[in-house]
Length: 268
Image (tube, rainbow, N blue to C red):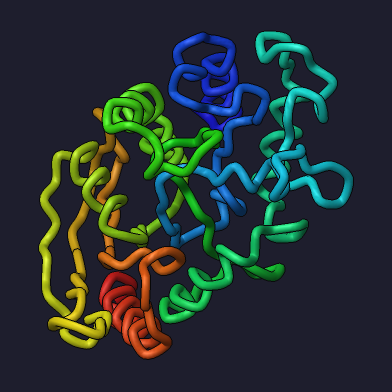
């Protein structure tokens, strides 16, 4: 199953009532990847796309040169069941060329600085990294604002997409951003990653010993029952770089060095 076939399935699911009950933005196209999946040897992993990929601060749909991804209106459609091959190719192109357009740099630049340690980057003509999500659909609210049952249902209803996409790719290293993503990935892969306390990653607090930082390593060969056809190395860190309170420059530099060291062992 190629990426266009995967996309066709994900698009058609948007017309069903179930995803709407899970706070999915019904008019926003599913996002296969941020950046070209076929050129990536490194992929970062998050939970699901931010609504800011489709709307501005006031909730108005992005248009013109501000637009990042396609929607029903930008494709001239009234419902997703009307989508043809030409529409799917436009959605795919917007994913492949995301970092050459108007990327959400406020979020991705922080991650890009970490993967530099693995000699990878989202940006430029030689970009060899992309970003993937456990769930390819943007929701009206943040992941933490969804109920536990809504999160579980989203992963159950679309968790196969990540496995199908990674099977199509040449990704060697999956870098997992934050404890919540790590826990969900362990669930859908049936793996328990090796956890190690990294003292240099402790986040300082005014009182107490601070918030510990953990490194996770492992290998995966299937996701939600979808065989990947190979083993992919997983490197995870417990702090969410964008939202964990008090992630210092020193901690980020240490995570970058750790990623570089571990990725180097994978490439050898």
